[in-house]
Amino acid sequence: MTDKEQCPGCGVVLKVRGNVAHKYLGCSASCWEQFGILCAKEYSNPEYMQFHRLTVDSYCAQHVGEENQQTLQSINLHLAALFWCFEEKLSLQHITKLMAVLKNNHKDKFQWYHPPSFENSINIVDVLKAQNAQEHCDLVYKWGENIWSCWKAYHSNIATLTASVKIY
Image 1 (cartoon, rainbow, N blue to C red):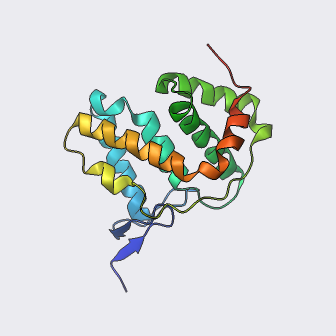
Image 2: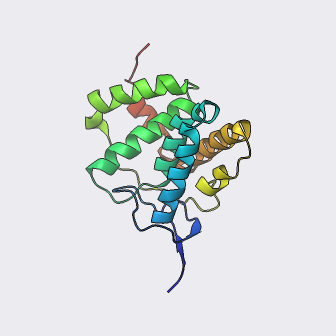
Image 3: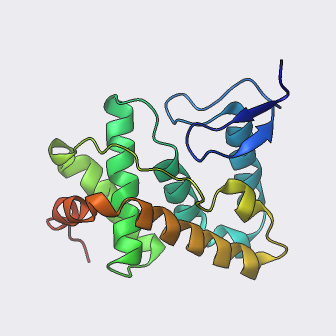
């Protein structure tokens, strides 16, 4: 028996610490625990929290899980958020509002996207190495860019999905 496990989403190998992973995201229990630690860090400090939207989108887009209705909605919403951030350069606050419109009014357009390889990608462990708020925000931004780039085969699909979603 080994005391380490590899995350099926991001591929990071971590010491087995927990036995509960997310209900539908494709992550190991240990990786999910690390995500909880990162979120606690963000929630406890407004300087870290300013990039929380991007943290969630990056993590979820990197940990897709099995094809089902929840995962279908999740991947479409999180990829749309990454599109709006990196292609449209919208604020994270505005993106949250757009995601609600997309979820409520356009879910009939959601498609299944087969996850790419995230080998050698930035992951949760890399982000947790940040020593201060600025470094954290920089790493979260790079993580998001990196994950969005991994999904390049579907960029045009996501652009089409988001084209009709407008709020000002």
